[in-house]
Length: 203
Image 1: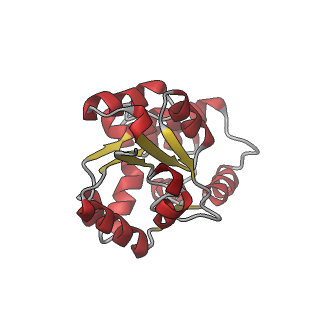
Image 2: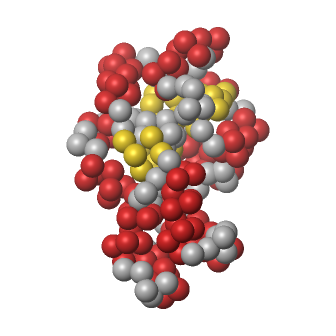
């Protein structure tokens, strides 16, 4: 029986346009593909191992012709909207007290600043969780095993009684290997509010 629900944030609650963001960034930086160094910097920033200042300095140093505000807008391009019906579903779920609710998201300070500014109910959303983990705050990142072990030990929960919901295949793969039940959600065809319909065999 599932006792804990662990949710990703992007493409589970907030809609993302990842492909559009990649195309937009490649166009801005006049690149055909992202260099390994750039990918590494992005990863370090997401894990909280670089400050926002250091992150932006890297891009300003490498692309001095591009204004910092434009870099920030490009970084935030993937963030679309947070449909209110998902918050309402989460609030109802929280009120039942049937499951422990945990958020586990790979994200960064600039993205969260955008969310706090544009999602008026962000604080209400955050209050629905028993634990709220953002990669840049806990210095751990999916799909690394350590972050999934951290969630289990920190919350004293058991992987086979925990459902992990994420749109990223690598993240889902690691969680499954560690014994979590999983829902590899497809944001194009599925909505997290249909959790108990789609995963009814687990409840």
